[in-house]
Length: 395
Image (tube, rainbow, N blue to C red; front, side):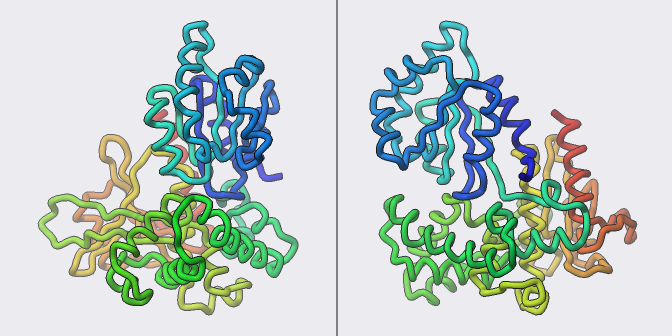
C-alpha cells in the first residue's frame, strides 16, 4: 500500500483541532487514509450515503453522547448540512470540559459545499486539509518509468495500481461515467450527462488553455453564463483547476483570464482516449498534459504555504507557474516535456518582470544542472523536494 504523506499532517491536525475536514474527489483515498490514521485511536466511521448510518446521526447529540470517547468520522458529510449547527454546540461543550481536539473528522468530495456549510457553523473550530491524487514523491522511485506511469494513469489509486493499462483506463472511464450519471445529479444540478461530458472533454482538449467562456459556449450552443456554471461545478468537485494569473503593476499588458486544467492527468487521457504511453507521446496534448501533471504534483505538497499563479503578457513573456511564498518571495517555473530543456526568451523576460528569486525549468529527465542566468533545469521529484525543504523550514 502506498503511504500517503498527508497522514502525518492529518494526525497532527487532529491532535490540535476539535474537527478536521479532509476534502478530495471521490476515490482518491480519503476513507483509507482516515481509517489508517484513526487506527491508533478509538473511532467510529459512518458513511452518510448509507441510509442506516444517516439514521444513526439523525440525533447527533445523542449519538455523540453514546460515543463521546471516540473520534467520529463522517464520510460525505455535505449530504446532511443541517448537522453542522448541532456539531458547534457539541464542540463548545467538549471544550468547556477541556476536551479540545480530535472529536470529528469530516470527509467530503465537494469542496465549496463543505467549506460553506461547515464554515458558517464551525468557524474557529475546524481545520481543512485537501488530499490530492498520489504524487511522484509517494509513488516514484525517481525513475523515468515510474514517473511516466503516474503521468499516464493519474493519481487515483485504483487507476494507478491497476494490473494493466487497459484495466486502468477502463477504471477511469467508469469513474467518469459514475460522476456524470450519479454523483453530479445527486448534488442537484440538472445538467444532461452527455452535455457535461462534452464540456469536460473540451477542457481536456484545451488542457492548460486560457479560459474563453464565449468560445466554449458557442461549441456547446449554450450561453456564457451556463458555461461558467459548468466550470464552477467542476472546480467545486475538485476535478478541474482554475490557475489564476499573477497580477501586479509591471507596466505591461497582462493576460487576465485564468488557465484551466483537468486536474488528474489520467482523467485527461481517458477523456481523450489515450490508453498507453506510446499513444500519449504522439498525441497533440502531450505538452499541455505534462504541464498540468507537473503543476498538480507541485501544488499537492503546498497545503496553502504558497500561492500559485501563471504569468503571461500580450507580447509573449510567460511563466507557466509562479509560487509566491510568505514574504512575497517568488519562484518562477517553466515546464518542458523535452529531455534537454532550454528556457525560452519569454521566460527570461517574465522572470525579470516579476523579480523572481529562484528560476527553474522542470523537464522529463532526472539530473539537475544550470542552464544559464540563474536558471536551474531540474526533475519534478527534485523540485518537489526543494519546495518541501522551503515550506517545512518555514513551519
